[in-house]
Length: 523
Image (cartoon, rainbow, N blue to C red; front, side, top):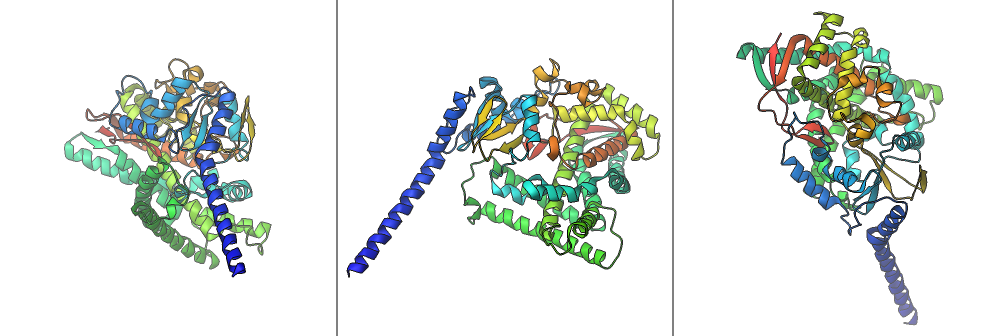
């Protein structure tokens, strides 16, 4: 009996100990640690709202986002879209200055806006890691974008040859096919109306870039890729909502309606990709030549990597799961980046007809009535200036965030472990101190002498990121955008429809909330 009582006493003591430790951990996570971090940041001169239990600034951020989405902007005034797109961060910087922070739940996120500090963050990528605030984001896209350390180095080494210029050149016929299909669709609509028609070009550009990435990524399996496009569009909506809320550890495992839908879509995408990849691997094993597409180039590079670094070591190359994740990243990033770049380019050229005329004159001078080709792209100086200016004013990704695993010195600040840093590209691209009083105006000629001259050799323009982890697909996106814009300029002139409502919306990428109705005129 005494042993039994002693046993029960031990169980009770252990249980109480576990409960106390758990309660202390929760208290530390919810209150003690955030307050320690806040005190540390304020002692160094950084300013922001006081920490509010659990929610931090997310509630106010959500309210301001909702309010901003209910309004439109006057496009003719300026392109100062910070208050519309990233309203809370814009307000924070205006209230507390550039040396400020915001609260993402119980985690403080410091705004980094000094070009010197920005370069440090991008360069020291082992110390400033990509945060996974909500693991649900990985179901939308992961791959090279999120990997760290040796895995990132291995994947970057394998994927690099996939985006070599000679590989991209081989994909031009696939681009031409997609552009031709869109041009025929637009010409048909114009013919029905006479010599011009009003068309929301945003869905057309999305479908065209989805078609292009499907053909260039998966070759003959492009129809399955188009199915994936629809699934990823739906997934982006669910994930975006989740990312703007507070993530509670373990919540993603609960059988909520949203969680079940996200997991269902992920399984379907995974199944499509596994089927495509396994078929392609069988073809390669049979000794047939690889196709001139991204998947073929990736599998070929992976095979070469395995042969070079050790056939018997399973960890040398990429697994089929790794390849699937990289394909998701190809698809989502490749389609989204180019479609938003093209839609904002058409909107701004519809507003600035003099620049549209200059770009068209250049395209006709370089290509005439022939299909734009890869070699001619280097001669499109005006087109390049325009695309850079669009990327400055309307960057596809409006901010880059990093987390700090351990205490780190950045410039004059000693940032404690657990703090995140925000690199607000949108606000930096519009900063008067860096770009001048005309920072919110569309002036492509600021890039006439190249990016280095426009930025005075400072890191103040980074639509694709910067440093060793700069977006590996940036050349792919720029080649596609230049070719597509050249096709459009050859065949149409265009202007904004009176029904156009300017309302940039950040939903994973920066998109036109109400589409882009534009009046097309056949040349």
